[in-house]
Amino acid sequence: MSVVSYDLNKSPIGIFDSGIGGLTVVKAIQAALPFERIVYFGDTARVPYGPKSQVAIRKYAADDTAILMRYQPKMIIVACNTVSALALDVVEKSCGHIPVIGVLKAGASMAVQVTKNQRIGVIGTQATICSNAYACAINELDADIEVISQACPLFVPLAEEGFVNHPATKLVAEHYLADLRKENIDTLVLGCTHYPILRQVIGETVGSGIRIIDSAEAVALKTSELLTESAMLNRSQKASVPHLLVSDLPQKFSNLYQLFMGSEQPDVDLVEV
Amino acid sequence: MSVVSYDLNKSPIGIFDSGIGGLTVVKAIQAALPFERIVYFGDTARVPYGPKSQVAIRKYAADDTAILMRYQPKMIIVACNTVSALALDVVEKSCGHIPVIGVLKAGASMAVQVTKNQRIGVIGTQATICSNAYACAINELDADIEVISQACPLFVPLAEEGFVNHPATKLVAEHYLADLRKENIDTLVLGCTHYPILRQVIGETVGSGIRIIDSAEAVALKTSELLTESAMLNRSQKASVPHLLVSDLPQKFSNLYQLFMGSEQPDVDLVEV
Image 1: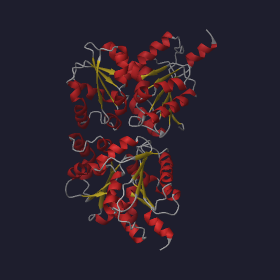
Image 2: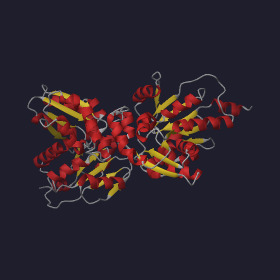
Image 3: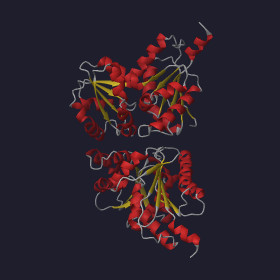
Image 4: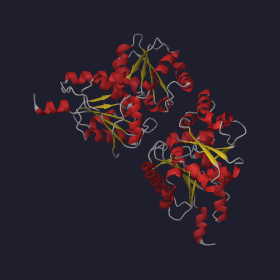
């Protein structure tokens, strides 16, 4: 085994998101690959990306990748659905030779494997849904699948405000998902990293017959396959805490991290974008 | 009359906000002073300011002021409550000699004039409420007044999503305002420029005995007084459309402008921050 591949194995996985939401991906990666080192960047100074223009989002994607590249990651996971939808090529170009996995393609691919009646629902932010990127990714894999999309802009603020079991969230879910329920879908993709936090109310609202795809779990599965196939798994058997970077309010991120991950309050570094 | 003061009279009023919310101030200024020229800047690339750090907000305040200063305004109105709370001194320093009015002091001052039982409620974003700036501004005018504050983070996304008469908004308002109702206040300040859009549901929830202070109306009144006193009113009798600038998504702003203002869809210029 060469020194280069040995170093690569010990290199961290770089993960970025517009803010806190990508921690659902960190959690899924830790569960699937407990010995991998992780560097996470949350662009909390410019969150949310959802309502911004494509030009702005592509610039942010290049900035975010450059920050992670300082840590020489062996691969990059784009935990942000908006960047996965509108700027994955920017990330690929900015990071050179290393592999890039976006939550969007991972979620789309799992949904295609799971559906039996070829009818898939997708929910996400306004920008993700308007980009039509999930429908494109799904139809690239199987052109016969019908994709029904619905933007749910209030789900992110509701999740961040902790309205997980609040009746208002149930009403908002009814508002967004009532039409989707009539569409006879058998699979629903949570096309935003915040949505797993509201998974229960979303599941109850669409009904029990529908399989819910959490893109964070899908991306962890795909990462595990990629690292195994390319012999890049870390052979150390020592779990390490993620290295956390944000562009604003590290203390707030640290508090939210504790809530998201149910772990000790971590150190969070501030970086400039 | 000197040339300088003549030019000043014809100069525009500069108004800025983190995004679209400040249009409630534009509307109030137009109603009170229909012949004044207005230059409005909405920092849509970096909206929202509410959850950002004080360091970030102070930098944004300097940037926003610099953009308006290119148009040689005769005064600046800070339509953003967060900047009014945390960085009004930055605006004053960045614009040199011209007068600056912030929504916060204007709203606080009107509330002090209106209250009879010396108990005032204030609602706003997390950043505005945590800064305690309304309570300070009110107690600077009258130290005996009791101020009861409540952050309502979901009101902005609900307003922007058009959930004006939605039952979910009523439930969220109940959630935020239930405790406030027990506090025997007689006056409630809407400490966020978006909140006038939800004025009806807020009013119904707190009950009819409470006088609601819209900071946009307060700032228009104060502006009118200032321009009259300093002989800076525009003597032209020709109403003009506001000059609109944003840092991202001018088309989306133009659409929302139409909804906010009930007027024709305007031209909106893109500027870089």
